[in-house]
Length: 271
Image (cartoon, rainbow, N blue to C red; front, side, top):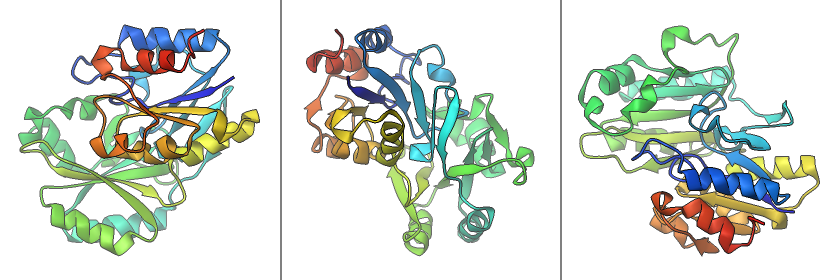
């Protein structure tokens, strides 16, 4: 039996078509029918899984490894202490940086982010639909006494401002940047140095008694690096990051060309 870990964005969910390819749904179904266990392994928080809620899986690793659940129970979670969060966000705001907090119950965006993506220039870019999801709220909905934050993202029109935050806090946090589209804000995903997707996978495997040699990871972006590098089989989507592909055991087809199905079929995981 293999333990298969699938990223969401760019792997299971095609943002160009705004749908999960039917071939990917079929691949998950066939792999589980063949006796393998299949898990979502995403950078998204656990409250942002609507895009894949119709896919039957054995468990979820979310928030880039800071959260893991299976069989209806949370087996691991690691939140960022409120005082640490205030320190980073306060410094960021002094540099003009805006932010989004990603928690268990919701996503909370600073007013500048809301204005930019829902009313301003960001409305013209792809990806703005993220800010219209039902789990996404303004900061007025955030209650630190009732909510836990697993990770956060920083945004700025000036890349240097984000780099200043990274330089100051690089010992405590990982900073995963993405290249912006023309006219779109620069952004950095911020995760505790204690967590990554491979770490979440280890927690899941410990629960089930498996080893990393039994794990198969499929992803497309640099926050998938550790799981691609450390799992027994690391697969990168054809539409994935070119740097990430250099770590892959196998590069499959693009998401819209049945990439997930092809990958699992290549390793004879579909029965």
